[in-house]
Image (cartoon, rainbow, N blue to C red):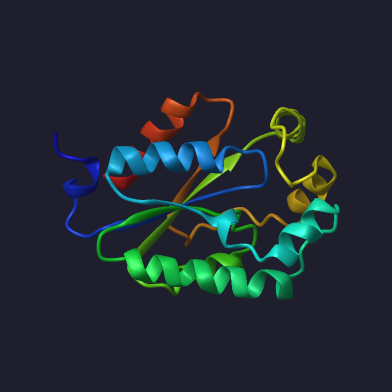
Length: 172
């Protein structure tokens, strides 16, 4: 069976973005499987210091995120020819600009939802280092996709399969 990825001439990098608890990892992994490309979990590239800071309930600064974003940009560059799906919060336009500088066609799928739903999801994932106390700072930092940014904004009340289908539809 041919993958959806090969329906177009050039490979696309999809960055599944949004605040903690929106479903980036689940949707990203499903999307990558459907496209037949690797999935990269952006959280795996955080330094131990960043993870410790977040676990302590301290929001990351732009300086904290700098090396992390550069590492993710390098991952995009390494996979640009064949396509990749990256799960990364990408909260600010400036962060998305860094990711886009990895080359190739980079699109964003913003998983958006209400604070109440996001908090509920965060409460229901035991063992994750990100405390619910950081949700408000993430929501305050979030800059939604702008009109000139390639991508889609999706409602996380939809099922994972519906969300993946919407992203695939935006790929074609």
